[in-house]
Amino acid sequence: MICSLTDIGGYIIGNIIGGKKLTKISPKKTYSGVLGSFLFPLIFCSLFFKFFNHLFVFDINLFILIILVSLITQMGDLIISFLKRKANLKDTGTLLPGHGGVLDRIDGILFGLPIGIMLISI
Image (cartoon, rainbow, N blue to C red; front, side, top):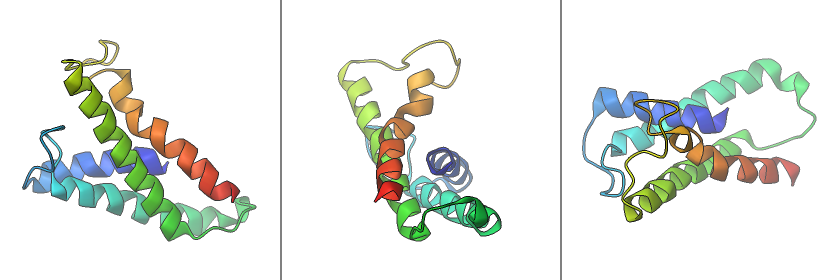
């Protein structure tokens, strides 16, 4: 949930606010998008946890978990974008037209999910 909300928040806030570009690696990413990538999971995951915390058997510091997983998710997205640029690939497939391929949908999750699982297991 954190990984998906990170992508969604970055996309929505980045498109609405726009602003200065974050890096040449991924030219559509902006600083406002990074902010949205932290805000969306903080807001929505906090609300989710507030209403459904009785379903969880582990005690976590939710704020730290969300920030760390969101950060790793964003870094994973940038790492995959960097590797795509090095390989001169624009898209990693045609299964999802307009989305850059399936890898672009799951790149952050590939990095964020294992970290999240590791953090809640401690």
